[in-house]
Each structure stands twice: as C-alpha cells, then as structure tokens.
Amino acid sequence: MEPTSRPPPRVLPRPPTASRALLVSPARTILRRPSHIAGAGIAPANGEREAMVNHTTASIAEAAPALAAAMANDTLFDTALPPLPTYSLEPTGDVLSWISDFWLSLLLPIAVYWAMSLFFHAIDVLDLFPQYRLHTPDEILKRNHASRYEVARDVVIQQIIQVVTGAALAITEPPEMKGKSHYDVAVWATRLRLAQRAMPGMLSALGLNATALSKSLSAAHPLLAGAIAGGYYPVAATAESSAPGFAPWEMAVAKLIYHVLIPGLQFFVAVFFLDTWQYFLHRLMHVNRWMYTTFHSRHHRLYVPYAYGALYNHPLEGFLLDTLGAGIAFKLTRMTVRQGTCFFAFSTIKTVDDHCGYAFPWDPLQLITSNNAAYHDIHHQTWGIKTNFSQPFFTFWDGLLNTKYKGPRRNRVAEKEREAKSK
Image (tube, rainbow, N blue to C red; front, side):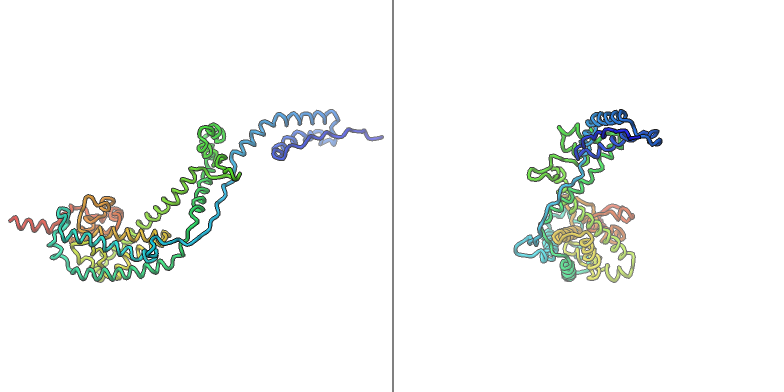
C-alpha cells in the first residue's frame, strides 16, 4: 500500500525581529496538536491543518495592535542611564596668592582670635557700651586671680600647640585636586534617577497606573510625566547624541546636594561632635576633683571672663578640650582643608564671643543660639559653676541632661555693692 501524498505545510512569514519574542508564544499555543490526536499517534488531516494555520494567521493579526501597545509601554520605562562625563584632575590653587592654603589654615584662627579680642578689649577699655556689660570694670580687677600677662602668655602657648597639631592634620591630608565636581554632580543625578525607579511601583500599590498617568501628563508637564514613569525623559537626550540625558531638575537638585547640602551636613556634624566632646570632657573635669584642681581650675581663675581669656587654660586641657576635639571633628567629617579652615576660624570666633563679657542684643552670634556670653558667664560664677557646661555652640546637652542653670541671671556682686552703698 503506497503512502498517501500530502501537500507541504504552509509556512507563515517570520515576524519582524523587534516583535518576534512577543509573537512566538501565541503561535505555539495555537499550533499545538490536540491531545486526543497526539495521544492516538494520528496526524491531522489536510483540511484540519489548513484551518489551524488560517486561524493562527487571524489570531496574530488580531493581536498585533495589543502587542504594539505593550511594546510602547515597555519603551516608556527605558532603563538606560545617562552616561557619566569624563574628567581630568589638576591641583587646586590657593585661595590667596600671597599665602598657601596650608599656612592659611594654621594662621587664620589665630588672627581672628586676636582681632576679635582686641575689638572687645577696646570696647572694654573705652567703656563704650556700659549698659550691656555683664560685670563692672572693678570686678575684673578684684575678682580675677590671674593677671592679664599670665592670661596672654598661656593663650600663646595654647596657640603654639594648636599650630603644631593643625600642621600634623594638614600634612596627613591628600593633595587637593579640582576638575571632578561636574562628575560628582552627575553621580548624584544618577542616584536621583535610580530613586525614581520606585515611583511606578509606589503608584501601583496605590492603585494607579503609572504608564497611563505619565502619558496623560506628557504634553503639558513632560518633566513630571518622566518622573512618574520612573525617570524616563526622552526630551533630555542631546542633539549631538542619542544617549539619554539628565533632566534639568535632576541636575539642579544634584548641584544643590553636592555644593550646599553635603558641606552643610559636614559642618553640622562637626559642630555636634565638638559640642558633645566638650560637654562631656568639660563636665568630667568638674566632677573629678583631681582633674579640676590639676587642670581646669586654671581657667576658672577668671571669675569675670573677658575676650582674650577664652583660651586661657592649662596646656594639656587646652589640647584635649579644644584642639583635639576640633581636629577629630575635622577628620570625622572628611572636610577639605578649606572647609576645616572655615570651621576652625568660626569655632574660634564663637569661643571669643562667649567670653567677651557683653550681652549685645544685636550680636548675631548671641542671637543664633542661647549658648552666648551671658549663658557661659553663669558657669564662671561660684553660684553657677556646676551648671551650663555646654560650649561652644548649642545648649543641647545641658537641656537633655538637666545641667542648665534655671535661676535668674543677675550680677550678685554688683547687687551687693549697690545694696551696701544704699545703706
């Protein structure tokens, strides 16, 4: 018996490459041999095969619009990231042409210390603002147990230690280079783009369709539409290259983060660390009798503080409390030498202002924080010596650990003198 001659099967044209993966699955499902025929080992007849092929062609034609729409939705969430720019490094120049940044970082805190101290000393000697004094001139002479010469001498010793420590810190820093800022800004813009990838999922959890919402906003608000779509900004591609680019708002926010927020955070962390360091070490020197009598009592020889007595300390205490604490804050926050110079200079200005002996209502440093000359002066009095340990910036730890002075701020010595004269 001769085998029956069968016509060759009809072959469908292959779909385009881009949509081939989407069309394979429906075709395979339709062309699968029925189970009752496959199980019996019987091939389908010619009519059945032709009907199956025709049905497949019609199904693909009907599915084409839906598949095209699916492909369009897929391209809406393009995962390609903008390329990072190249950069070349070169040494950073000095801020001032006549002095290197190295020496500026060492000498500027000393210069501002004596400039501010002499300013307040002139006000004190000329008696320009007596209404804002915390103490009378006679109290400075009668109540203080250290001469002005002794104070100036110990301050100079403290500043020599400060310069040596600052030089050691600056030498250990790597050479500062420039030319990479635009790259670092682009890195932050990339992080913003990656953060936007979570937007479609978040909207989906709220029952919203990110694709449909993005398309409806694309004409009037293209940047908002791109953010909703998960960071897809086709308009951000440059004319010179088809590669994706960053949206203007991404670059603006990245520059804000890199040039403002990060340096601000470094400064805030350094301030918090220095306040914490000085509060607990300062309080320890009052709790431990040996440490107080050996080291810290020298600073309290000034019952009536004045500006250039701010760094009047035992050399070891000055190193531990001021120099070492500021140096660790500088290293911990990974500041540049220029940032460290500003931080050291500002800390010095604040310390001098806290010991100036005047409560000026227009002094910005005394308005920003309640840790000011009047606040710290209480700590130098016999009746407030166990309170107000915080310095130099904020009073956070005094408030948290209940060491803030709660009584009225008054000059008890001056009050006694007035009472004696009135009798």
